[in-house]
Length: 77
Image (cartoon, rainbow, N blue to C red; front, side):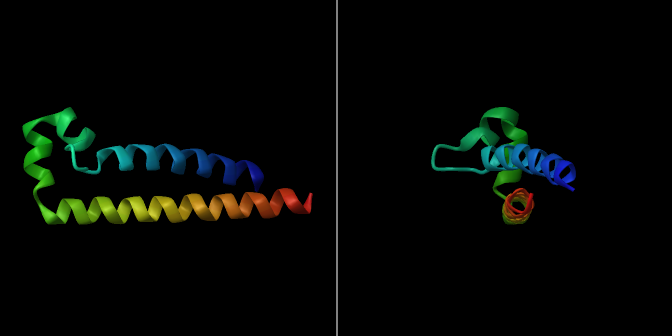
């Protein structure tokens, strides 16, 4: 169980890093630097931004659940 939660935690952590970097900030963010016109044309769409927000929140919730689960499992050992 600990190994499974650790693997899910690592995947969720990497996914969170990528998703946060893809968000468009005040300076345009990494999303406008990577793809140029492709990402800039998509980033104007509110549907893409909403989906990116949802994916980031889901990855954050999974990450939080893994941290709490690992903490509880390590505490009982």
